Length: 425
Ligand code: PMP
Image (tube, protein in one colour):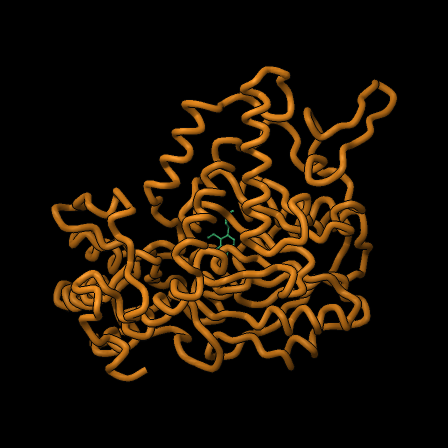
């Protein structure tokens, strides 16, 4: 990207990002107007969790104040109203991700729980000792550890596709890792450390040609690009609401209807049963079979509001905006002496996530100095220790961009990093 990546200002004035077609709706986010350490907040940690627009907060509050009851239980009016709202939320989420039907959407606690569900249910019921699960070297621990637990229980074998020095996953390397025993491929859609966008549609074709299923961890994709799970050809797709400007405590497992229908429950309790006796219990159809106990009702309302909000803004515009911010940041950060961007450039698309280190300065110290200027980034291993090992570092500093960030935030980051250099000589 050339200097144009950081060109300012666009037609919307000072709040305009480097992508002139998209105007970051900062006023929608109450928290962005609070100072941190006496400075205006510069939130560059959306990949860890995104801030919440008023429309999401209001939707949850209004529901709790006017329609709240437990769902699928009460014969009273509020029970019906709450159930209708909860199921309407499922419909809206299904439409948002291009699911063929609402019953392909299972509400869970988050992406972590969704992957554990698939490992415990699909994994234990269909995979046998010696069957292979293929992962990549850039996975989040949430897409590694559940498969290791399954390995202990069932004797499955984990195989790992290496990444290139540029942080990409090559289809040739994937092809070489797939074998006659491959039953499942489980990959991130977007790396939470490098922003690499994996070619999941091609990965789906290769996995299916090898007779395997594909699970996609869409945590970092759903907040920032149009995702159509049916068109992608995945079999399972998981994500968390809190990274897509929705509430904590809820996420989604999307699964192909016929796969979910064949899967046994993984947790037992109220609401997931058809009938119970001490001798025998029968179960409801998906998605209810997988939603034991009282579900995250208020959170489902918030998640649906977040879907509507993102759809209203336009995911393609958000993607272009975040990519432009990232390109601008790459350019600005290159000018910081001693700063090394990690696997930041290469073929293929990158989402708005960028990792870097500074010679002789621990990433935690970078984050601490930036925090004094009101700039929030993440420092650490980002729950991706195998990737850290591949990159040859223990930790990175990570800036991640959301729909509310502007090129002024990139300027603040670049200036903050110059200050880090001064502080640490
Ligand atoms: N996968 C990826 C790629 C992530 O970035 C995260 C969150 N950091 C997770 C999985 C886990 O998400 P959660 O903690 O919301 O379950």
